[in-house]
Image 1 (cartoon, rainbow, N blue to C red):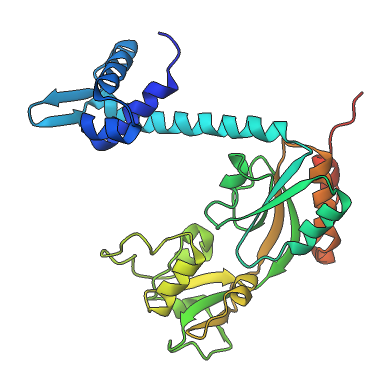
Image 2: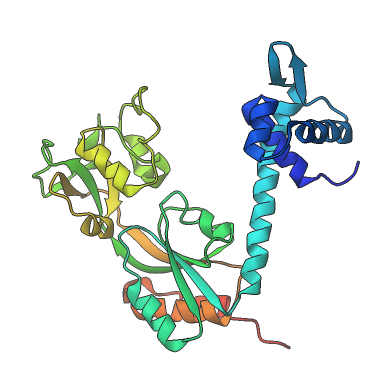
Length: 307
C-alpha cells in the first residue's frame, strides 16, 4: 500500500458529506469525472468499497463510515503540521498572543513592542473552548487563559485570581442579590459546557431545550449574553469578563461558594525561545505576588544554551 494522498482524502470527505457526486464536485470546484476517478483510485489503493452506489443514490459503505472520522483527524493533523512549520520559520520575528474575553493585555503587548521594535506582535481573542486548542495547533504562540483546562504538555504561569459571577437577566429574582450560592441556580440552564464550570455537576439543572438551534453552547460571549438577557439560561464568568461586557439588561451576581478562577499565561513546554522567555518576564512583572511562586518557568521557556 502506498502513501495516502491527502487530496484524495479531501475529495472523499466532500463526497461523504454531500453523498452526491455532482454537488461534491461543485463544492470542490472540479469536474465530476475527476472526482469519480479520485474516489475509485482511493478505493483501489485501500482495497475496500467506500461508497455503495445504486439508482436511489450514493451512501457510505461500512469502510467509508470508518474512514470519514479517521480522514478528518488525519487532515486536521496535516493542517497542524503546516501551521507549526510556518510558525517555526517566523520564530523570533513574530509573536501571536491569544487572550480570553475581558482580559486586558495591552500593557504586555506595548512592553513587548518597546523592548523589541522589530518584533511583530499580533493578538487574537479566544474563547474558553479554544484558548488552549489554538495554542496546541499552532494558531497562537502563547495564551492568556482562564482555568480549568488540560495542561498536559504545557508550561503554565499563574498570574492572578479573580472571582466568578453568574450572569442573570436583569429581572431575575436573584438579580438584586449581592451574592448567591451555586445551589441557588438549580433549575437554570447552563449556557456553556459543564467542563467550564466543573462544580455545576452537583447542581440539578434541566438540559439545553430540545428546540435549541445550536446557539446555547456557542463559544461567542455576545451570543451567550443575548441568550441570558432573553431568559434562556445563565452563564458563569470571571470578573474581568463582567467588567468588559456591562449591559443594563443583565445583572452579574458573585457566586460566593465558587473558588476563584486562575488567570494564566500558557505556552507549549516544547517551545523555547528568548521571545517567549521575555513575554513571561513581562507578564510576571504585573502578576499578583501571591500567585508567583514559579519564576523557574523562565528557564523552561528560554532558548537552550549551546554546549
